[in-house]
Image (cartoon, rainbow, N blue to C red; front, side, top):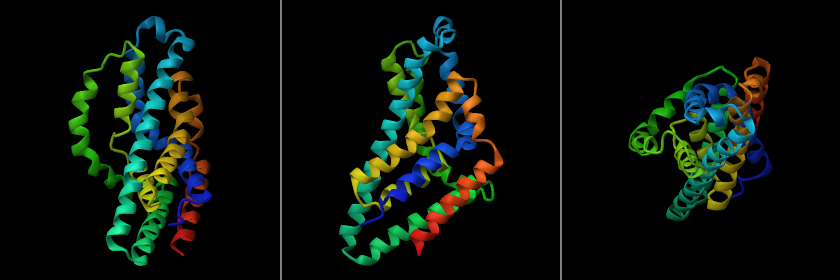
Length: 225
């Protein structure tokens, strides 16, 4: 099914990059906890802290890609199970409607997608105790495990893009969609850790949020049509 077109990847990137307000709300405390858990010698030296922050975030993005591949495979299985063109249109329409809701969410005009985050709470309750075993972080291997588990934190933005990944009906395309989204989140979260939020604050500006929301709504409507 031809849904993993360039505009879908652009939308995933824009959602990650311009969803900074939500990222700060959901992950700001986690970023602070991970950063403060490092030894004072590392925290005081940005160059020594950078490998840990990169490891956290690259492992997190890898987790997104794995989830995208799983959902892309699920979309493919649904289409094969039904063996009907109607299922292709249903998944594509679902992805389009999700984009519209996501655009409204990014622009600050609707909080409907916040309810989606509750769906992942049971999974996170199982993963959270595992993550705590690796705290405080003293080695890059620990940072990699924490980062990968971080990808499964309940998040409406992540779940919305996963719907797009499922609509691709292709594990590789689903992984690439989530990888693109993850790369879009990198400047905000890495900037929050290394630059005291200077980069992340750019995404808080209302006109940027509204512009991002309108772009995503436009892509969603085009897909529905």
